[in-house]
Image (cartoon, rainbow, N blue to C red; front, top):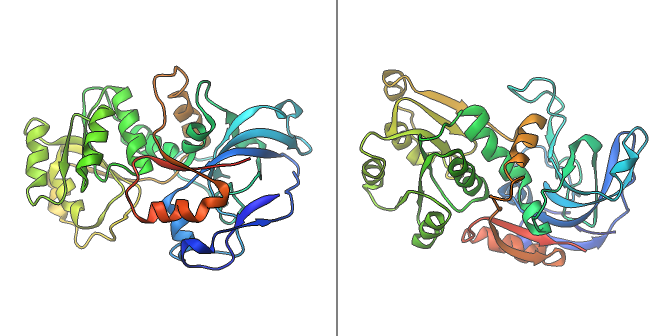
Length: 336
């Protein structure tokens, strides 16, 4: 089969289309002929050597949607021919609160979705949401799962609450906006791009601020009614973390799923204990989280935001586009 194989760490041009051996299903496994895959920042960190446990060569890619082509012994033969989306959270374990020792993410160390075929546990495939295109379905898994767990399973966000999502435009942040609005929350966002702020408002955001403005936090507090917000869904970290703590109302929740701008220099603990704040960490999600997340698309009221679609052979160009950080929503690879 054709696949994008990463043999060396470095720039996007190292991503080359090659012929590799077709995967074969083992017991309880399924082979999916992919129609589309999607990029995540995780792929960039792997490509550049900024991720733990890298093994080469590897077929990257955590997100994918396609048609089940074959199953191994013990898997349901009725799955063959079905249109599916893949849950990239492998071997989560029995505890909903935290993943177990065998947990891993599709695309490293297991070969992923930048390919015509991918092998996954049969329990990790789910029916493709009706009415979504292949590019939309492939855009959902990793970012949708991370956003849903942060917003719902961890923060327990409720209708009417105020939610702040810094760094709008990335995949997780954009899904968090969509899910929060469907829950009935008021949503406020930040970005360094006026265009991204306008895109967010078109998707339902109640307000947005430019984080390059020195008084962005004060502006956001005023937008939210002067009392701050109930929930922060943060994948940014860095210098803005303490300002997010300031923005939270007493009893508020900050859920952190990443730190794209680097570590937090110093956490002001008095903000936490004085306001009785809840600081929650999260990453990916359980099988139950994934199933509940997909249900958000069942009635047709939500559609994933796809920024741009590239052919599989142009994976290098897709990675360059992600490196430029100009995207709003998911970057997708069309396959087959």
